[in-house]
Image (cartoon, rainbow, N blue to C red; front, side):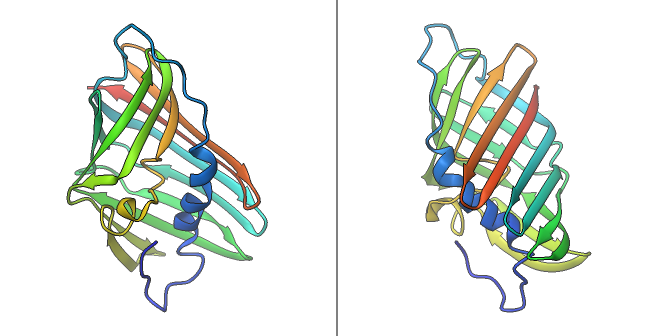
Length: 199
């Protein structure tokens, strides 16, 4: 997906590998039929809770954090605003090696999207349409590991970040929305659940 330093351990890249492993199955999520009612997902949101849990052969990963990420959903596009958001804390075991990492996101990411449903449905992002200056910086045990562009090194390469899956199912009301992304394949099972509150 992107070039890493030769000194970067396999454990440091575990969350990135997980995202790539989830992608294929996630894209197969069934989409709810379009509803005549105005989708309640439209508007501006702020992330209040994030969980990622994954298990597979030789791999166990948990991620929490990200509070404060802004999300603006329009009819055919989305904008993520990472400025001022909390880092994503990632802990786990990869091939018997424990790791404790943080991913700090900054700036903005814009993508074209397809929205289906009213109070529940699906949101699909178009990775090749990505633009903006969004970046991610990874540290492990307090030491800097690597930094990369979400646009050039991730989405335009056809992949995605765990904070912004390519496709998620959602349920929402006037005040909150919850996204869910789940995948099971040969690499294991992973689930991402995010909750946003309307701004």
